[in-house]
Image (cartoon, rainbow, N blue to C red; front, side, top):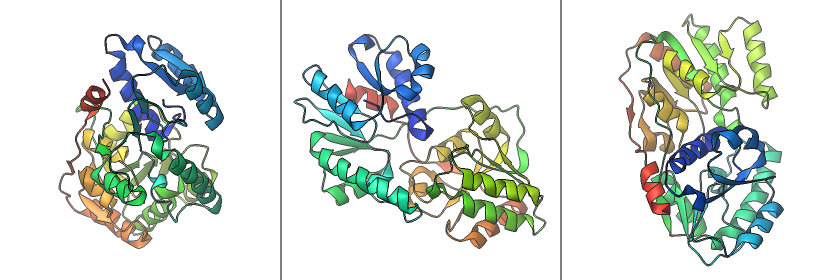
Length: 331
């Protein structure tokens, strides 16, 4: 059940999961409930799988479980929410949205209100899962403490990428591959980059901000008009993303909160040096080359300048890919 997954990091992980399932024998015995917004892309890509596409609403999901409540031996909910019914079979719920644990102060009033409502729904559905699966020990600790739910297992997984050794890194090329939700902290990053650039610390900043984030797009446009070399590539596909990572010397990651942080893992896979927020989630995933205070524009700027003028040590990947273990658990 991945009904609400249709974009971003969740969509990347869904692809990884479905790719693994596609290789299993007897995968026709598995039913998949997916969001109709990805049907056009998925109907050919995963044509061998038994898929039902629905409009992603709580009501549609509830009707689905009423119809099929006695049909399953096991249920895996990938979209953060347990089933709307208490089922008589083991239920595993994969929680990869940290807002259900703590709503960041950086969100707008409207966004905070929406997630308060979602959190109420989440809490009501909590008894309907047997286990929660999360991406880090930190998430496990925070989930257990907030909701007093003890059956939590840690199963991080991600796509395995390989860098192109024939592509040379572009010196002082900084990259941040991310949608521009408020907690991703693009505005502080852009101001910090421009502050560093004004010190004659010449570099380039590459971003992937889509049309869904007009405030950030407007700021990028303003900075471009002022002569700052910020290149926004918009929404990128996997091929375009690989090209960006292959060229980047540094991945800069100012996000204020993550359940995993796929961008950090991708940076390591493409041999980039990581400059990231000095926050707990970062140190659970990688050992970065350099860290900064993500709420301090001047500190971010100083670390960009430091990276340009100094030889940084290589970053190191800490987290392990447990996709095979996850599949075995569900089997």
